[in-house]
Image (cartoon, rainbow over all chains, first blue to last red; front, side):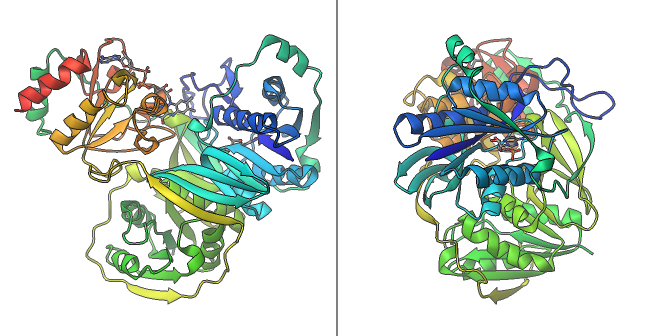
Length: 248
Length: 313
Ligand SMILES: Cc1cc2nc3c(=O)[nH]c(=O)nc-3n(C[C@H](O)[C@H](O)[C@H](O)COP(=O)(O)OP(=O)(O)OC[C@H]3O[C@@H](n4cnc5c(N)ncnc54)[C@H](O)[C@@H]3O)c2cc1C
Ligand SMILES: Nc1ncnc2c1ncn2[C@@H]1O[C@H](COP(=O)(O)O)[C@@H](O)[C@H]1O
Protein backbone atom coordinates (compact mmCIF):
# COMPACT_ATOMS: atom_id res chain seq x y z
CA UNK A 1 0.00 0.00 0.00
CA UNK A 2 1.04 3.56 -0.70
CA UNK A 3 0.29 6.45 1.66
CA UNK A 4 -0.08 10.03 0.46
CA UNK A 5 0.55 12.80 3.00
CA UNK A 6 -0.41 16.43 2.48
CA UNK A 7 2.06 19.06 3.62
CA UNK A 8 1.35 22.76 3.80
CA UNK A 9 3.98 25.42 4.36
CA UNK A 10 2.74 27.76 7.09
CA UNK A 11 4.01 30.44 9.46
CA UNK A 12 5.61 28.63 12.39
CA UNK A 13 3.27 28.19 15.34
CA UNK A 14 5.63 30.11 17.65
CA UNK A 15 5.44 33.29 15.60
CA UNK A 16 3.18 36.04 16.86
CA UNK A 17 1.45 36.97 13.67
CA UNK A 18 0.69 40.65 13.13
CA UNK A 19 -1.73 42.35 10.78
CA UNK A 20 -0.17 44.82 8.32
CA UNK A 21 -1.15 48.43 9.06
CA UNK A 22 -2.99 48.78 5.74
CA UNK A 23 -5.07 45.68 6.47
CA UNK A 24 -3.95 43.97 3.27
CA UNK A 25 -2.72 40.86 5.03
CA UNK A 26 -0.47 39.66 7.81
CA UNK A 27 3.23 40.35 8.08
CA UNK A 28 5.10 37.29 6.83
CA UNK A 29 8.30 39.13 5.94
CA UNK A 30 11.31 37.28 7.31
CA UNK A 31 9.04 35.18 9.48
CA UNK A 32 9.94 31.56 10.22
CA UNK A 33 8.05 29.10 8.02
CA UNK A 34 7.45 25.45 8.89
CA UNK A 35 5.56 22.34 8.02
CA UNK A 36 2.02 22.72 9.37
CA UNK A 37 2.20 20.91 12.76
CA UNK A 38 -0.77 18.67 11.97
CA UNK A 39 0.96 17.59 8.75
CA UNK A 40 4.06 16.57 10.68
CA UNK A 41 1.78 14.37 12.74
CA UNK A 42 0.24 13.02 9.51
CA UNK A 43 3.65 12.15 8.11
CA UNK A 44 4.78 10.57 11.38
CA UNK A 45 1.71 8.33 11.33
CA UNK A 46 2.38 7.31 7.74
CA UNK A 47 6.00 6.48 8.56
CA UNK A 48 4.96 4.38 11.55
CA UNK A 49 2.49 2.45 9.39
CA UNK A 50 5.27 1.81 6.88
CA UNK A 51 7.72 0.80 9.60
CA UNK A 52 5.14 -1.63 10.98
CA UNK A 53 5.14 -3.30 7.56
CA UNK A 54 1.69 -2.11 6.53
CA UNK A 55 2.78 0.21 3.72
CA UNK A 56 5.54 0.20 1.11
CA UNK A 57 5.81 3.83 0.20
CA UNK A 58 5.12 7.24 1.72
CA UNK A 59 4.69 10.16 -0.68
CA UNK A 60 4.45 13.77 0.51
CA UNK A 61 2.63 16.33 -1.61
CA UNK A 62 2.35 20.07 -1.30
CA UNK A 63 0.55 22.66 -3.39
CA UNK A 64 2.33 25.99 -3.40
CA UNK A 65 5.07 28.15 -4.82
CA UNK A 66 8.66 26.87 -5.04
CA UNK A 67 9.25 27.85 -1.40
CA UNK A 68 7.18 24.84 -0.35
CA UNK A 69 9.96 22.58 -1.64
CA UNK A 70 11.70 23.37 1.65
CA UNK A 71 8.89 21.78 3.61
CA UNK A 72 8.78 18.83 1.21
CA UNK A 73 12.53 18.35 1.86
CA UNK A 74 11.79 18.36 5.58
CA UNK A 75 9.24 15.65 4.90
CA UNK A 76 11.78 13.65 2.95
CA UNK A 77 14.29 14.09 5.78
CA UNK A 78 11.72 12.78 8.24
CA UNK A 79 11.53 9.64 6.12
CA UNK A 80 9.12 10.09 3.20
CA UNK A 81 10.27 8.26 0.06
CA UNK A 82 9.20 10.76 -2.55
CA UNK A 83 7.79 14.25 -2.87
CA UNK A 84 5.43 15.95 -5.30
CA UNK A 85 5.06 19.70 -5.61
CA UNK A 86 1.91 21.02 -7.24
CA UNK A 87 3.22 24.38 -8.38
CA UNK A 88 0.81 27.27 -7.90
CA UNK A 89 1.29 31.01 -8.36
CA UNK A 90 -0.19 31.99 -5.07
CA UNK A 91 -2.14 30.48 -2.23
CA UNK A 92 -5.10 28.33 -3.18
CA UNK A 93 -8.32 27.76 -1.27
CA UNK A 94 -9.35 24.39 0.21
CA UNK A 95 -11.64 23.35 -2.65
CA UNK A 96 -8.87 23.91 -5.19
CA UNK A 97 -6.38 22.11 -2.93
CA UNK A 98 -8.78 19.17 -2.63
CA UNK A 99 -9.34 19.05 -6.39
CA UNK A 100 -5.61 19.14 -7.06
CA UNK A 101 -4.94 16.47 -4.44
CA UNK A 102 -7.63 14.32 -6.05
CA UNK A 103 -5.71 14.42 -9.35
CA UNK A 104 -2.59 13.21 -7.57
CA UNK A 105 -4.65 10.54 -5.81
CA UNK A 106 -5.95 9.33 -9.17
CA UNK A 107 -2.39 9.03 -10.48
CA UNK A 108 -0.82 7.50 -7.42
CA UNK A 109 -3.72 5.35 -6.20
CA UNK A 110 -2.81 5.41 -2.51
CA UNK A 111 -4.57 3.15 -0.01
CA UNK A 112 -4.58 5.93 2.51
CA UNK A 113 -4.36 9.72 2.39
CA UNK A 114 -3.40 11.43 5.63
CA UNK A 115 -3.81 15.19 6.00
CA UNK A 116 -3.75 17.55 8.95
CA UNK A 117 -7.08 18.48 10.48
CA UNK A 118 -6.35 22.14 9.87
CA UNK A 119 -3.69 24.41 8.51
CA UNK A 120 -2.77 26.80 11.30
CA UNK A 121 -2.56 29.81 8.99
CA UNK A 122 -6.10 30.01 7.63
CA UNK A 123 -7.55 27.62 10.23
CA UNK A 124 -9.94 26.35 7.57
CA UNK A 125 -10.29 22.69 8.54
CA UNK A 126 -11.82 21.72 5.19
CA UNK A 127 -9.41 20.13 2.76
CA UNK A 128 -9.52 16.51 3.99
CA UNK A 129 -13.30 16.43 4.15
CA UNK A 130 -13.50 17.96 0.67
CA UNK A 131 -11.04 15.50 -0.81
CA UNK A 132 -13.03 12.61 0.69
CA UNK A 133 -16.25 14.03 -0.78
CA UNK A 134 -14.83 14.52 -4.27
CA UNK A 135 -13.15 11.10 -4.17
CA UNK A 136 -16.38 9.58 -2.82
CA UNK A 137 -14.43 7.76 -0.12
CA UNK A 138 -14.63 7.61 3.71
CA UNK A 139 -13.28 10.36 5.93
CA UNK A 140 -12.00 9.87 9.46
CA UNK A 141 -11.30 13.35 10.76
CA UNK A 142 -9.55 14.48 13.98
CA UNK A 143 -7.88 11.09 14.47
CA UNK A 144 -6.15 10.29 17.74
CA UNK A 145 -5.62 6.58 16.99
CA UNK A 146 -5.43 4.58 13.76
CA UNK A 147 -5.46 0.79 13.62
CA UNK A 148 -5.11 -0.88 10.23
CA UNK A 149 -6.55 -4.31 9.55
CA UNK A 150 -6.31 -5.48 5.93
CA UNK A 151 -8.51 -3.27 3.82
CA UNK A 152 -10.10 -1.56 6.81
CA UNK A 153 -9.02 1.05 9.34
CA UNK A 154 -10.43 1.60 12.79
CA UNK A 155 -10.02 5.23 13.76
CA UNK A 156 -10.57 6.89 17.11
CA UNK A 157 -11.66 10.50 16.69
CA UNK A 158 -11.43 13.40 19.14
CA UNK A 159 -14.95 14.84 19.26
CA UNK A 160 -16.57 17.35 21.61
CA UNK A 161 -18.32 14.58 23.52
CA UNK A 162 -15.18 12.45 24.00
CA UNK A 163 -13.67 9.78 21.78
CA UNK A 164 -15.63 8.36 18.88
CA UNK A 165 -14.57 5.24 17.03
CA UNK A 166 -15.47 4.53 13.43
CA UNK A 167 -14.46 1.87 10.95
CA UNK A 168 -13.73 2.78 7.35
CA UNK A 169 -12.97 0.80 4.22
CA UNK A 170 -9.75 1.71 2.42
CA UNK A 171 -8.89 3.76 0.53
CA UNK A 172 -9.86 6.56 2.87
CA UNK A 173 -8.87 10.04 4.01
CA UNK A 174 -7.70 10.48 7.60
CA UNK A 175 -7.07 13.88 9.19
CA UNK A 176 -4.88 14.13 12.27
CA UNK A 177 -5.46 15.57 15.70
CA UNK A 178 -2.72 16.56 18.13
CA UNK A 179 -2.56 13.40 20.19
CA UNK A 180 -2.20 10.90 17.35
CA UNK A 181 1.57 10.75 17.87
CA UNK A 182 4.67 12.80 18.57
CA UNK A 183 6.58 13.49 15.37
CA UNK A 184 10.24 12.46 15.28
CA UNK A 185 13.07 14.97 15.07
CA UNK A 186 15.02 15.20 11.87
CA UNK A 187 18.69 14.19 12.14
CA UNK A 188 21.45 15.88 10.15
CA UNK A 189 22.43 12.83 8.04
CA UNK A 190 18.78 12.47 7.07
CA UNK A 191 18.78 16.01 5.74
CA UNK A 192 21.73 15.11 3.52
CA UNK A 193 20.04 11.91 2.38
CA UNK A 194 16.83 13.81 1.65
CA UNK A 195 18.63 15.88 -0.97
CA UNK A 196 18.95 12.79 -3.14
CA UNK A 197 15.35 11.69 -2.82
CA UNK A 198 13.04 12.42 -5.79
CA UNK A 199 11.02 15.63 -5.78
CA UNK A 200 8.76 15.98 -8.82
CA UNK A 201 6.96 19.14 -9.78
CA UNK A 202 3.65 19.27 -11.62
CA UNK A 203 2.03 22.53 -12.69
CA UNK A 204 -1.33 23.20 -11.09
CA UNK A 205 -2.47 24.55 -14.47
CA UNK A 206 -1.72 21.21 -16.11
CA UNK A 207 -3.84 19.15 -13.75
CA UNK A 208 -7.04 20.28 -15.45
CA UNK A 209 -8.77 21.49 -12.32
CA UNK A 210 -10.59 24.72 -11.69
CA UNK A 211 -9.86 26.91 -8.71
CA UNK A 212 -13.17 28.67 -8.29
CA UNK A 213 -15.44 29.81 -7.07
CA UNK A 214 -13.01 31.38 -4.61
CA UNK A 215 -14.19 33.29 -1.59
CA UNK A 216 -13.13 36.94 -1.86
CA UNK A 217 -10.74 37.80 0.92
CA UNK A 218 -11.17 41.38 2.10
CA UNK A 219 -9.45 43.44 4.70
CA UNK A 220 -7.56 42.05 7.69
CA UNK A 221 -7.84 43.56 11.12
CA UNK A 222 -6.25 42.83 14.47
CA UNK A 223 -8.54 41.09 16.94
CA UNK A 224 -10.38 43.27 19.45
CA UNK A 225 -8.07 43.85 22.42
CA UNK A 226 -9.20 42.98 25.90
CA UNK A 227 -9.01 45.82 28.39
CA UNK A 228 -5.91 45.87 30.54
CA UNK A 229 -6.53 43.99 33.75
CA UNK A 230 -5.37 44.46 37.33
CA UNK A 231 -3.09 42.45 39.61
CA UNK A 232 -4.10 41.59 43.14
CA UNK A 233 -1.74 40.38 45.84
CA UNK A 234 -3.79 37.91 47.84
CA UNK A 235 -6.62 35.40 47.62
CA UNK A 236 -8.62 37.70 49.86
CA UNK A 237 -8.23 40.66 47.50
CA UNK A 238 -9.11 38.42 44.56
CA UNK A 239 -12.35 37.21 46.10
CA UNK A 240 -13.24 40.75 47.15
CA UNK A 241 -12.69 42.01 43.62
CA UNK A 242 -14.83 39.24 42.13
CA UNK A 243 -17.60 39.92 44.64
CA UNK A 244 -17.45 43.65 43.82
CA UNK A 245 -17.94 42.81 40.18
CA UNK A 246 -20.88 40.58 41.03
CA UNK A 247 -19.14 37.49 39.70
CA UNK A 248 -19.18 35.49 42.95
CA UNK B 1 -34.38 37.06 0.16
CA UNK B 2 -32.12 34.56 1.84
CA UNK B 3 -33.34 31.05 2.52
CA UNK B 4 -31.28 29.56 5.29
CA UNK B 5 -30.98 25.92 6.32
CA UNK B 6 -29.34 25.04 9.64
CA UNK B 7 -28.15 21.47 10.14
CA UNK B 8 -29.10 20.55 13.70
CA UNK B 9 -26.59 18.97 16.04
CA UNK B 10 -28.08 16.49 18.50
CA UNK B 11 -27.34 13.23 20.28
CA UNK B 12 -30.48 11.41 19.18
CA UNK B 13 -32.58 12.62 22.08
CA UNK B 14 -31.84 16.31 22.61
CA UNK B 15 -30.69 19.29 20.60
CA UNK B 16 -27.17 20.57 21.22
CA UNK B 17 -27.14 24.27 22.20
CA UNK B 18 -24.94 24.97 19.19
CA UNK B 19 -28.07 24.79 17.03
CA UNK B 20 -29.76 27.67 18.89
CA UNK B 21 -26.57 29.67 18.35
CA UNK B 22 -26.69 29.00 14.63
CA UNK B 23 -30.24 30.40 14.68
CA UNK B 24 -28.88 33.70 16.05
CA UNK B 25 -26.31 33.83 13.28
CA UNK B 26 -29.04 33.05 10.73
CA UNK B 27 -31.13 35.90 12.12
CA UNK B 28 -28.20 38.24 11.58
CA UNK B 29 -28.08 37.13 7.93
CA UNK B 30 -31.84 37.64 7.65
CA UNK B 31 -34.40 35.64 5.71
CA UNK B 32 -36.41 32.43 6.12
CA UNK B 33 -34.80 30.04 8.59
CA UNK B 34 -35.34 26.27 8.39
CA UNK B 35 -33.70 23.59 10.47
CA UNK B 36 -32.80 20.14 9.13
CA UNK B 37 -32.91 17.38 11.72
CA UNK B 38 -31.27 14.21 10.44
CA UNK B 39 -31.06 10.96 12.38
CA UNK B 40 -33.21 8.05 13.32
CA UNK B 41 -36.23 8.25 15.62
CA UNK B 42 -35.78 12.00 16.01
CA UNK B 43 -39.32 13.24 16.59
CA UNK B 44 -38.41 14.68 19.99
CA UNK B 45 -35.40 16.52 18.59
CA UNK B 46 -37.44 17.89 15.70
CA UNK B 47 -40.10 19.09 18.13
CA UNK B 48 -37.44 20.82 20.21
CA UNK B 49 -36.00 22.52 17.12
CA UNK B 50 -39.49 23.69 16.12
CA UNK B 51 -39.72 25.65 19.36
CA UNK B 52 -36.72 27.88 18.67
CA UNK B 53 -37.73 31.48 18.07
CA UNK B 54 -37.34 32.67 14.51
CA UNK B 55 -37.52 29.25 12.90
CA UNK B 56 -39.86 28.93 9.96
CA UNK B 57 -39.93 25.18 9.41
CA UNK B 58 -38.20 22.01 10.56
CA UNK B 59 -37.37 19.38 7.95
CA UNK B 60 -36.86 16.01 9.55
CA UNK B 61 -35.23 13.09 7.76
CA UNK B 62 -35.17 9.80 9.63
CA UNK B 63 -33.30 6.76 8.29
CA UNK B 64 -31.19 3.92 9.67
CA UNK B 65 -28.00 5.13 7.96
CA UNK B 66 -28.43 8.55 9.57
CA UNK B 67 -28.55 7.23 13.15
CA UNK B 68 -25.03 8.48 13.86
CA UNK B 69 -23.65 11.69 12.37
CA UNK B 70 -21.27 10.05 9.89
CA UNK B 71 -20.34 12.78 7.41
CA UNK B 72 -20.16 10.31 4.53
CA UNK B 73 -23.84 9.45 5.05
CA UNK B 74 -25.11 12.85 6.14
CA UNK B 75 -23.42 15.11 3.59
CA UNK B 76 -25.25 13.76 0.50
CA UNK B 77 -28.52 14.07 2.39
CA UNK B 78 -27.84 17.69 3.35
CA UNK B 79 -26.66 18.43 -0.19
CA UNK B 80 -29.92 16.96 -1.49
CA UNK B 81 -31.86 19.50 0.59
CA UNK B 82 -29.65 22.38 -0.54
CA UNK B 83 -31.50 23.22 -3.77
CA UNK B 84 -34.11 25.23 -1.89
CA UNK B 85 -31.61 27.31 0.06
CA UNK B 86 -29.13 30.15 -0.38
CA UNK B 87 -27.26 29.51 2.91
CA UNK B 88 -26.37 26.28 4.73
CA UNK B 89 -25.21 26.63 8.33
CA UNK B 90 -23.68 24.19 10.78
CA UNK B 91 -22.02 24.84 14.13
CA UNK B 92 -18.27 25.10 14.41
CA UNK B 93 -18.15 22.10 16.74
CA UNK B 94 -16.46 18.83 15.85
CA UNK B 95 -19.84 17.75 14.42
CA UNK B 96 -20.12 20.72 12.06
CA UNK B 97 -16.43 20.85 11.21
CA UNK B 98 -16.57 17.23 10.10
CA UNK B 99 -19.79 17.52 8.10
CA UNK B 100 -20.06 20.96 6.49
CA UNK B 101 -16.88 20.94 4.35
CA UNK B 102 -18.05 17.64 2.86
CA UNK B 103 -21.37 19.31 2.03
CA UNK B 104 -19.56 22.33 0.57
CA UNK B 105 -17.43 20.13 -1.69
CA UNK B 106 -20.52 18.30 -2.97
CA UNK B 107 -22.01 21.70 -3.82
CA UNK B 108 -18.78 22.91 -5.42
CA UNK B 109 -18.07 25.81 -3.07
CA UNK B 110 -15.53 26.73 -0.41
CA UNK B 111 -16.72 26.96 3.16
CA UNK B 112 -16.72 29.98 5.47
CA UNK B 113 -15.21 28.50 8.64
CA UNK B 114 -15.92 29.86 12.14
CA UNK B 115 -18.11 32.82 11.21
CA UNK B 116 -18.06 35.31 14.08
CA UNK B 117 -19.87 38.27 12.54
CA UNK B 118 -22.28 38.88 9.69
CA UNK B 119 -21.81 42.07 7.64
CA UNK B 120 -24.49 41.36 5.07
CA UNK B 121 -25.96 38.22 3.54
CA UNK B 122 -22.80 37.54 1.56
CA UNK B 123 -20.02 38.97 3.73
CA UNK B 124 -18.72 37.60 6.98
CA UNK B 125 -15.91 37.98 9.50
CA UNK B 126 -13.82 35.04 10.65
CA UNK B 127 -10.60 34.52 12.60
CA UNK B 128 -7.37 33.21 11.11
CA UNK B 129 -3.92 32.54 12.61
CA UNK B 130 -5.39 31.33 15.91
CA UNK B 131 -7.41 34.51 16.19
CA UNK B 132 -4.43 36.83 15.65
CA UNK B 133 -6.20 38.34 12.67
CA UNK B 134 -9.82 38.77 11.65
CA UNK B 135 -10.67 38.77 7.96
CA UNK B 136 -13.67 39.84 5.95
CA UNK B 137 -14.68 37.23 3.42
CA UNK B 138 -17.26 37.61 0.71
CA UNK B 139 -19.10 34.99 -1.30
CA UNK B 140 -18.74 35.32 -5.06
CA UNK B 141 -21.94 36.49 -6.76
CA UNK B 142 -24.57 33.82 -7.19
CA UNK B 143 -22.93 31.06 -5.17
CA UNK B 144 -24.37 29.19 -2.23
CA UNK B 145 -22.97 30.06 1.16
CA UNK B 146 -21.86 27.12 3.30
CA UNK B 147 -20.55 28.03 6.73
CA UNK B 148 -19.71 26.87 10.21
CA UNK B 149 -20.79 29.24 12.95
CA UNK B 150 -18.27 30.07 15.69
CA UNK B 151 -20.56 29.25 18.61
CA UNK B 152 -18.71 31.39 21.18
CA UNK B 153 -19.56 34.51 19.16
CA UNK B 154 -23.33 33.99 19.23
CA UNK B 155 -26.02 33.85 21.87
CA UNK B 156 -28.65 31.14 21.90
CA UNK B 157 -32.00 31.82 20.28
CA UNK B 158 -34.72 31.42 22.90
CA UNK B 159 -37.44 28.80 22.83
CA UNK B 160 -40.98 30.09 22.37
CA UNK B 161 -41.78 29.51 18.71
CA UNK B 162 -43.86 26.83 17.06
CA UNK B 163 -42.62 26.00 13.57
CA UNK B 164 -44.12 23.25 11.42
CA UNK B 165 -42.29 19.96 11.24
CA UNK B 166 -42.16 18.34 7.83
CA UNK B 167 -40.96 14.74 7.58
CA UNK B 168 -39.14 13.71 4.44
CA UNK B 169 -37.84 10.41 3.15
CA UNK B 170 -34.10 10.05 2.90
CA UNK B 171 -33.08 10.54 -0.70
CA UNK B 172 -29.75 8.77 -0.45
CA UNK B 173 -28.95 5.28 0.76
CA UNK B 174 -25.84 5.70 2.89
CA UNK B 175 -22.28 5.18 1.76
CA UNK B 176 -21.70 1.76 3.29
CA UNK B 177 -17.94 2.29 3.48
CA UNK B 178 -18.07 4.06 6.85
CA UNK B 179 -19.37 2.41 10.01
CA UNK B 180 -19.97 3.82 13.48
CA UNK B 181 -18.40 1.73 16.25
CA UNK B 182 -18.84 3.61 19.51
CA UNK B 183 -18.52 6.73 21.63
CA UNK B 184 -16.61 6.89 24.86
CA UNK B 185 -17.50 10.06 26.68
CA UNK B 186 -14.71 11.71 28.58
CA UNK B 187 -16.49 13.50 31.39
CA UNK B 188 -18.71 11.86 33.99
CA UNK B 189 -21.71 13.89 32.84
CA UNK B 190 -22.19 15.21 36.38
CA UNK B 191 -20.53 18.57 35.87
CA UNK B 192 -21.82 21.51 33.83
CA UNK B 193 -21.05 21.39 30.13
CA UNK B 194 -17.79 23.14 29.26
CA UNK B 195 -19.21 24.78 26.13
CA UNK B 196 -22.22 26.39 27.78
CA UNK B 197 -21.31 26.85 31.46
CA UNK B 198 -21.28 30.44 32.78
CA UNK B 199 -18.21 29.63 34.87
CA UNK B 200 -15.21 27.50 33.91
CA UNK B 201 -12.19 26.50 36.01
CA UNK B 202 -9.16 25.30 34.02
CA UNK B 203 -5.89 23.72 35.01
CA UNK B 204 -2.61 23.45 33.12
CA UNK B 205 0.62 21.52 33.14
CA UNK B 206 1.35 22.92 36.60
CA UNK B 207 -1.12 20.49 38.14
CA UNK B 208 1.47 17.77 37.67
CA UNK B 209 -0.68 14.63 37.71
CA UNK B 210 -4.21 13.30 37.35
CA UNK B 211 -4.37 12.92 41.14
CA UNK B 212 -3.37 16.51 41.77
CA UNK B 213 -5.83 17.73 39.16
CA UNK B 214 -8.46 16.83 41.79
CA UNK B 215 -7.92 20.25 43.40
CA UNK B 216 -9.31 21.81 40.21
CA UNK B 217 -12.34 19.50 40.19
CA UNK B 218 -13.06 20.17 43.85
CA UNK B 219 -12.73 23.90 43.43
CA UNK B 220 -14.99 23.83 40.37
CA UNK B 221 -17.57 21.72 42.18
CA UNK B 222 -17.60 24.18 45.02
CA UNK B 223 -18.44 26.95 42.55
CA UNK B 224 -20.72 24.85 40.37
CA UNK B 225 -18.36 25.48 37.45
CA UNK B 226 -17.38 23.40 34.44
CA UNK B 227 -13.78 22.13 34.18
CA UNK B 228 -11.36 22.78 31.33
CA UNK B 229 -7.66 22.27 30.68
CA UNK B 230 -4.73 23.32 28.55
CA UNK B 231 -3.35 21.08 25.86
CA UNK B 232 -0.35 20.28 28.03
CA UNK B 233 -2.63 18.92 30.77
CA UNK B 234 -4.51 16.78 28.25
CA UNK B 235 -1.34 15.53 26.54
CA UNK B 236 0.11 14.55 29.90
CA UNK B 237 -3.00 12.48 30.58
CA UNK B 238 -4.25 14.44 33.60
CA UNK B 239 -7.66 14.87 31.96
CA UNK B 240 -9.54 13.59 28.88
CA UNK B 241 -9.27 15.27 25.48
CA UNK B 242 -12.77 16.74 25.52
CA UNK B 243 -11.64 19.18 28.20
CA UNK B 244 -9.07 20.94 26.03
CA UNK B 245 -9.70 24.64 25.59
CA UNK B 246 -8.07 26.52 22.71
CA UNK B 247 -7.44 26.89 19.00
CA UNK B 248 -7.63 23.17 18.44
CA UNK B 249 -9.89 22.34 21.37
CA UNK B 250 -13.04 24.10 22.50
CA UNK B 251 -13.63 27.81 21.99
CA UNK B 252 -15.65 29.00 24.96
CA UNK B 253 -17.19 32.21 26.27
CA UNK B 254 -18.09 31.83 29.95
CA UNK B 255 -18.86 34.87 32.13
CA UNK B 256 -15.96 33.92 34.38
CA UNK B 257 -12.88 31.87 33.45
CA UNK B 258 -10.26 30.74 35.98
CA UNK B 259 -6.83 29.72 34.65
CA UNK B 260 -4.64 27.93 37.19
CA UNK B 261 -1.07 27.09 36.22
CA UNK B 262 -1.60 27.89 32.55
CA UNK B 263 1.13 29.93 30.85
CA UNK B 264 -1.16 31.58 28.29
CA UNK B 265 0.12 30.33 24.93
CA UNK B 266 -1.64 31.99 22.00
CA UNK B 267 -3.31 28.68 21.12
CA UNK B 268 -4.90 28.59 24.57
CA UNK B 269 -5.86 32.27 24.68
CA UNK B 270 -7.71 32.02 21.40
CA UNK B 271 -10.15 29.67 23.13
CA UNK B 272 -11.02 32.10 25.94
CA UNK B 273 -10.91 35.53 24.27
CA UNK B 274 -14.66 35.90 24.48
CA UNK B 275 -14.84 35.16 28.20
CA UNK B 276 -16.43 37.95 30.28
CA UNK B 277 -13.75 37.98 32.96
CA UNK B 278 -10.49 36.04 33.04
CA UNK B 279 -8.80 35.28 36.36
CA UNK B 280 -5.25 33.92 36.23
CA UNK B 281 -3.19 32.39 38.99
CA UNK B 282 0.39 31.61 38.04
CA UNK B 283 3.59 31.54 40.05
CA UNK B 284 5.52 33.26 37.26
CA UNK B 285 4.82 37.00 37.20
CA UNK B 286 6.03 37.11 33.59
CA UNK B 287 3.58 34.49 32.33
CA UNK B 288 1.80 35.74 29.18
CA UNK B 289 -1.57 34.78 30.65
CA UNK B 290 -1.36 37.98 32.72
CA UNK B 291 -1.47 40.01 29.50
CA UNK B 292 -5.05 38.91 28.89
CA UNK B 293 -6.21 38.35 32.46
CA UNK B 294 -8.68 40.84 33.95
CA UNK B 295 -7.54 39.91 37.42
CA UNK B 296 -4.15 38.30 38.01
CA UNK B 297 -2.57 36.83 41.11
CA UNK B 298 1.04 35.70 41.27
CA UNK B 299 1.24 32.66 43.50
CA UNK B 300 1.36 28.90 43.88
CA UNK B 301 -1.99 27.46 42.90
CA UNK B 302 -1.74 24.75 45.53
CA UNK B 303 -1.74 27.37 48.28
CA UNK B 304 -3.95 29.94 46.53
CA UNK B 305 -6.87 27.58 45.85
CA UNK B 306 -7.35 26.59 49.53
CA UNK B 307 -7.08 30.26 50.47
CA UNK B 308 -9.80 31.21 47.99
CA UNK B 309 -11.96 28.37 49.25
CA UNK B 310 -11.51 29.64 52.77
CA UNK B 311 -12.56 33.14 51.72
CA UNK B 312 -15.67 31.71 50.11
CA UNK B 313 -16.53 29.95 53.35
C1 LIG C 1 -0.84 23.26 16.46
C2 LIG C 1 -0.94 23.54 17.93
C3 LIG C 1 -2.20 23.61 18.50
C4 LIG C 1 -2.34 23.85 19.88
N1 LIG C 1 -3.59 23.92 20.41
C5 LIG C 1 -3.73 24.17 21.73
C6 LIG C 1 -5.04 24.29 22.33
O1 LIG C 1 -6.08 24.14 21.69
N2 LIG C 1 -5.11 24.55 23.67
C7 LIG C 1 -4.00 24.72 24.45
O2 LIG C 1 -4.14 24.95 25.67
N3 LIG C 1 -2.77 24.60 23.90
C8 LIG C 1 -2.62 24.32 22.57
N4 LIG C 1 -1.35 24.19 22.06
C9 LIG C 1 -0.20 24.15 22.99
C10 LIG C 1 0.27 25.49 23.46
O3 LIG C 1 1.20 26.01 22.52
C11 LIG C 1 0.99 25.35 24.84
O4 LIG C 1 2.04 24.43 24.70
C12 LIG C 1 0.07 24.86 25.96
O5 LIG C 1 -1.10 25.67 26.00
C13 LIG C 1 0.80 24.96 27.30
O6 LIG C 1 0.01 24.46 28.35
P1 LIG C 1 0.24 24.98 29.85
O7 LIG C 1 0.04 26.44 29.89
O8 LIG C 1 -0.61 24.14 30.73
O9 LIG C 1 1.75 24.56 30.14
P2 LIG C 1 3.05 25.45 30.31
O10 LIG C 1 3.22 26.34 29.15
O11 LIG C 1 4.12 24.52 30.66
O12 LIG C 1 2.71 26.38 31.54
C14 LIG C 1 2.61 25.95 32.84
C15 LIG C 1 2.48 27.20 33.69
O13 LIG C 1 2.23 26.85 35.05
C16 LIG C 1 2.95 27.73 35.89
N5 LIG C 1 3.13 27.02 37.16
C17 LIG C 1 3.92 25.96 37.42
N6 LIG C 1 3.74 25.52 38.67
C18 LIG C 1 2.81 26.34 39.23
C19 LIG C 1 2.18 26.38 40.51
N7 LIG C 1 2.48 25.49 41.46
N8 LIG C 1 1.27 27.35 40.73
C20 LIG C 1 0.94 28.26 39.76
N9 LIG C 1 1.50 28.24 38.55
C21 LIG C 1 2.41 27.29 38.28
C22 LIG C 1 4.22 28.05 35.15
O14 LIG C 1 4.74 29.28 35.58
C23 LIG C 1 3.72 28.08 33.69
O15 LIG C 1 3.36 29.40 33.32
C24 LIG C 1 -1.20 23.98 20.68
C25 LIG C 1 0.07 23.91 20.10
C26 LIG C 1 0.19 23.68 18.74
C27 LIG C 1 1.55 23.61 18.14
N1 LIG D 1 -1.57 23.70 -0.31
C1 LIG D 1 -1.61 22.51 0.31
N2 LIG D 1 -0.73 21.54 -0.01
C2 LIG D 1 -0.75 20.33 0.59
N3 LIG D 1 -1.62 20.00 1.54
C3 LIG D 1 -2.53 20.93 1.90
C4 LIG D 1 -2.58 22.22 1.32
N4 LIG D 1 -3.59 22.90 1.89
C5 LIG D 1 -4.14 22.08 2.81
N5 LIG D 1 -3.50 20.89 2.82
C6 LIG D 1 -3.77 19.74 3.70
O1 LIG D 1 -5.07 19.87 4.25
C7 LIG D 1 -4.99 20.02 5.66
C8 LIG D 1 -6.10 20.93 6.15
O2 LIG D 1 -5.93 22.22 5.62
P1 LIG D 1 -7.07 23.35 5.70
O3 LIG D 1 -8.32 22.73 5.18
O4 LIG D 1 -6.56 24.46 4.83
O5 LIG D 1 -7.18 23.76 7.13
C9 LIG D 1 -3.58 20.49 5.95
O6 LIG D 1 -3.19 20.13 7.25
C10 LIG D 1 -2.80 19.76 4.87
O7 LIG D 1 -2.55 18.42 5.25
